[in-house]
Length: 244
Image (cartoon, rainbow, N blue to C red; front, side):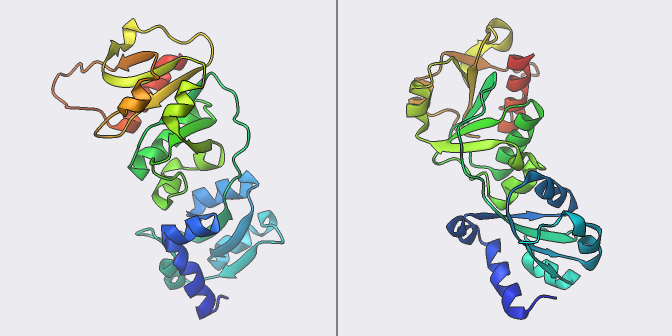
């Protein structure tokens, strides 16, 4: 069982600032908890129903603090509308040397955590393990981002850098999503390593980052009516085009 003081202490992690200060992130729900147990990341605390704890006892490390909680206690911890059996507090990954792959994803000033998480999930599907972000891009450990990744947060490495400078020194072709680019069908696909740059949801790629783009690329508006594509949808279309 969990004490009132411990419950209050853990509930403070509903605040993103507290998570950032302690270098941790929150995972909620059966699906994400299963991914967390397989990830090998240090799990500091698990709060869960008696049923979940019993069915997963053999996968929980001896160094993890576990508390059985009621539905109402889980609701106090959760940031979700409908808390789902288990809440976890995990240590964040240490950024290591990037995994080399055919395509590296770069995100410039992305602000929506749902878009960020969906892009990470799409990258994971296509085997992209390295994502480089501008310092003002939404955090990959934002609670909404984490949930939207559906487990990709455990398999992709996200690095926050001075993006224009990083792009200038990457020494490989940079494809940038732009309304002023060439249509997909007219742009040569990369034959070796390359970077795909996705800009802010409403403002696109910053002028500083755009200076490093080798191939501005456009998804043609075949319907002729919609003003723009969602950033995560655009990223998925471009990733598929460049890798297939």
